[in-house]
Image 1 (cartoon, rainbow, N blue to C red):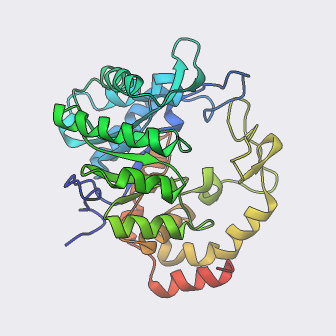
Image 2 (cartoon, one colour):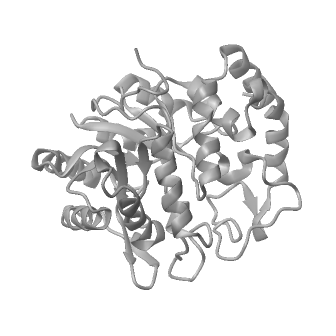
Length: 330
């Protein structure tokens, strides 16, 4: 029987549990070509390594990163944290973005088959491993016809033993369906949290027996309870100069009033049975579908412990799920 602690990633047979940890934040600072921050600000590498190892102790085995996070630094750090314990972990990473590792700048994207192999081999070196459990296309709006070629390339990488399964990080169900046709496609990574549902993507994952890997499960920190109307994000944090797709924060890293109001509307239900707000947000995702695998970010041991603690409470009830839907007008 599938439980929160014992869950399979889609149809891959890979056991990973229902909670993963996202490794974007531990990558540290990096920017776009114009100098705008793409990371979450300064980090403490020793604390990040300790947090990964603490997560393993608490039963969290699934770690999601990307080659571009920190311009390679997140992969290097995760590989260091898992040294000697690789067999205990399920590693997911992504490719498609091009970056300068020395300058810590993302310079563009490349959806060619040739670049896919080069990116995979580079990720394996940074991670210090000879295989990746789940490899994901990181270009959410890539051309579907070119994506079909990449899907076939991924099947080849599975045969070579370089990856165990693959998926696409995209919010477009039609694009996700292109990858879903591949025998070793196991997941779609997409935005989903209690504030913003994604019914078409969830339905696709359930129909195709794919894992629904949920990025932004805590709305970039808005669902942690640590942000109020007067909060500000520090320089070097993507939330301080939010790009167009980042709805949760306004200029200067000020939480958006409309989203804060929605958080307040559901706070009491999310914090039921003694949960923290973040734990309740994760519980909503588990109630939403048996396919969901939220990947909250973390930078400290304390954050790792709080997120991992959500598993003990389990999902919200069907009644609580329905009540939240009413409160948010869904």
